[in-house]
Image (cartoon, rainbow, N blue to C red; front, side, top):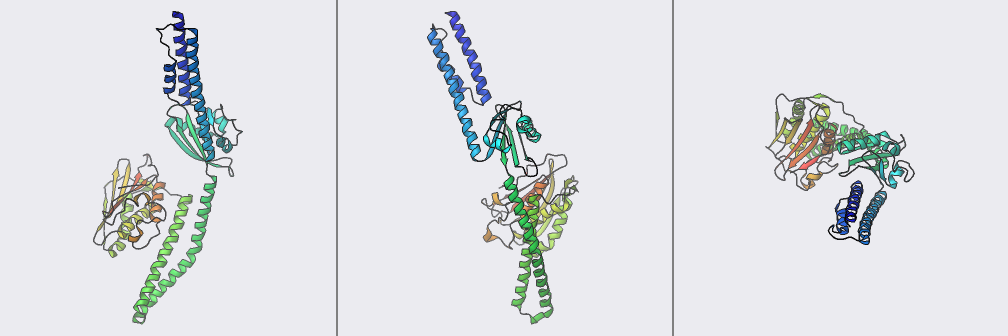
Length: 425
């Protein structure tokens, strides 16, 4: 019976190799295979009958078939779920052949159901841009991109690719054509509304300014209450004009209509000039402004006017939320491969509840304590501008202990920061 024992051991080894290969190629662990082997083991020291050998092999086979069936059902279920939420899912092998593709993926790419399976990426996807995203993910782990198929009226797809920790590459396709259309409609609406509002607002502002001059010229003939109302009219007209301007600015930034004109910029000089423009406002509020610039700072690539807008917004907010006789400090220094500019105040701070939302459009932290109005757009605009420069705008604060807003811009040749504003205590 020795030859029978040897044959059985050899058969087990072959089956283990086959099941392990199937498990790895399907992205499964070897636990199920090991259990099957253990259950199917027959001690080599025992005498084996032909029936025992067949029974052991059949048990291994049934376990392998059950595992493969369960995996297939799981993949079908996941593909069905992806179809329900309108997301295309494609799995490529390491040599970029389509192994799995759900119905939504076929619909997005206008392919017959099942026609992509087994084909190379370029044959199945028919677009070298998608293949390039897959190759980048295979090399670097992740990749993404947005492409328009069959321009100008084809679907707009966001492609996200990620290398599997086991084998192959996963692609997720999402049609964002309707989202982009709604974004264009919103931007056009805000643009048109802002332009339509500017003329009457400008007219009202000029009338309010004229009334203020006439009241000053009339002297005591104008009652004090009337002077207060005229001054209030001037302030509110200015607030409305600022809101319209910021709405238009944000709409242009978000729609990509406002392109940056990059040049070599001294961030220290921009910070100093921005602070000087706001010094009269700070003096009226009895706030001290200090600027600290590290000497011999490298230049950054950026648009000075837009970066100045960021400083102006941050310093204005710091002054507005600071108590009288306190100090607002603007510091600029080098930190590794980036230049960091921080605006620090000694004001009311930001609560932990408000921190995660501080850069959202129209969001105002603790409205009951907000003085001087505001549109809630300034920080959103500042964040967009910094992100457009490849940098990051972050905030650190504790309620009642002031706040520090930090703008970090990469030096030329450095890797740009991930454009996602964050908040931290």
